Length: 202
Image (cartoon, rainbow, N blue to C red; front, side, top):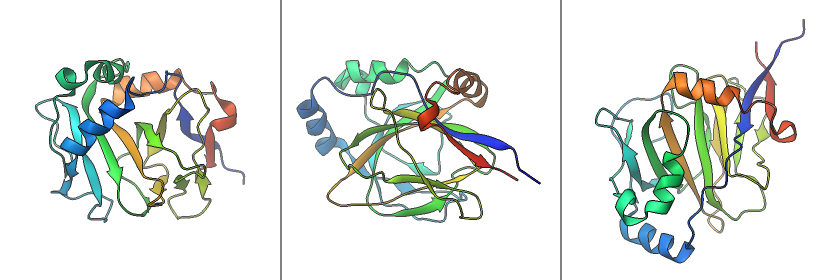
């Protein structure tokens, strides 16, 4: 019996998230980025080797990993405005740098679309990958040159990242409302068919 193909990863048709002055960004990063602390339970058993900061969060936003808050709206408003232009209801937004390998895992107990931006990574070889929940069928994320935004179905598949010290990566993690995120991602399906990832999901 053949299984139905399920779309699990799609690029998002938005301009690249990037600062208009990288030197200004790196000054901010070096000054404010601090280690994250895991304070709760999640399907991901890793304790975490993350550094970064939150740049937006609502009062009730309480993720498993805790980060310091940076007032990017006043420190770098043009970069902040790019994030806030996302057409979804935001709970939080966080810049994070990984300091180690993260084997394939899920982040949430229930399936959901998760939005991310590969904000900085100069590695010519992909570092982000997916597998089925049984750890088979590894596929690498490859984004079109026009955008560094994408979304993936956390919980339906696993995701992992490879750490290469010479090629650090900073990702923007977006925490958003399920309903508005689902509706937005529906508009992105098949816009980049060559970079869309599908799996046979049982």
